[in-house]
Image (tube, rainbow, N blue to C red):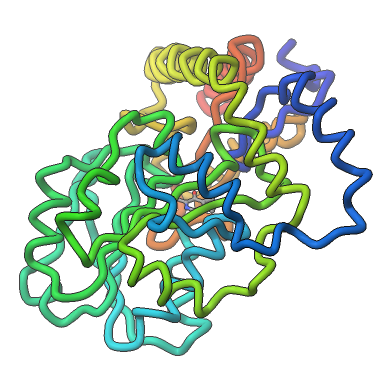
Length: 341
Ligand SMILES: Cc1ncc(COP(=O)(O)O)c(C=O)c1O
C-alpha cells in the first residue's frame, strides 16, 4: 500500500459534496434538457423562491437566488462595502477578493488563538465598517460561531453584517430567524457543499426585502441559468437522501479527526465537511501535500487561493466516505514514518 498510488484519484481539494447525486434527480434533470431553448423563468424565480422559502422558513420576498454564493459575496460587497469591509481571518478568500476587485478599503482581523477561532472585532472597528463578514462554520477551520457573538456584532454594527452559512447543513445552526429583528443582517447559503450542485452554481441571499432589492441591483436578471433553477426546485424533494449523507460525513469526519490525532497530526475541531490539519512547518506541509499528490490524493493546501490569512503550514481535507478517508489516513501514517527516517 505504502508504495502504491491510490487506484482511483481521490479529490479532497474542493469542499463540494463527495457523494453521487440521487438517480431520480439525474433522470428528472435529463428530461429538463428539452426546455433549454428557453430562458429561465421570467418571474424573478418565483417557483424557486417559494421552494427556498419552504426550506428555510423565510418568506419568498426575503430571498434572492444567485449564481452560486460567490455571486452573493460579490453583489453584497458592491452594494454595501464602499466605506470599510471587516474580514475575520483566516477565512474564505472571496470576501477579500471582492473587496480588492472593487477597490474598497478592508481590514483583516486576526481571529485565531491556537486551534480556537473566535471573532475578534472591536467595537471601534464595527462602528466604522459598512460591511462585516462572518463565516459560520468558518472555512477553512470548520469552527462554529456562537449565536450570542453574532447577535452582539449585529447590535454593535451600523453597517451590514453578512453571515455566510454556505456549510449550514453540516452545522445545523442558523441566524435566518433573526432577519426581521435585525435589518442589517444578510445570510448567504449555497447548494454546492450540501446538495452536490456545485457545478450548477446555485446560492441565495436571505435578508429584508429592502436589502434584497439593493443586492439584486448588482446581479444580472437571468443570474441563475435554467438548468440550475430546475435543479434547485427538484433537489429539495431528495432531502432524506442528503440528510443521511450529512450524518455520514459527520461520522467520518470524527473518524478522520481521531485517526489524525492517532498518528500525531494536530487538526482543528470541525463542524463542517472538511478538516484543517497543522503540519507545523512549511517544508513538512509541502512534502505531505506532494506525497499525497503522488499517490493520487488531491488536497487543499494553505498556499492555494481558497483562504485569506492562513499561514503556510496547513492542509484542508474535505471529508469523503470512510473508505477514502481511511486510505488517506494510511498514506499519512506512511508519510509520518518517512519524516522520521
Ligand atoms: C465559506 C464559503 N462561502 C461561499 C463559497 C462559495 O460557494 P458557491 O459554490 O455557492 O459559490 C464557498 C466555497 O468554497 C465557501 O467556502
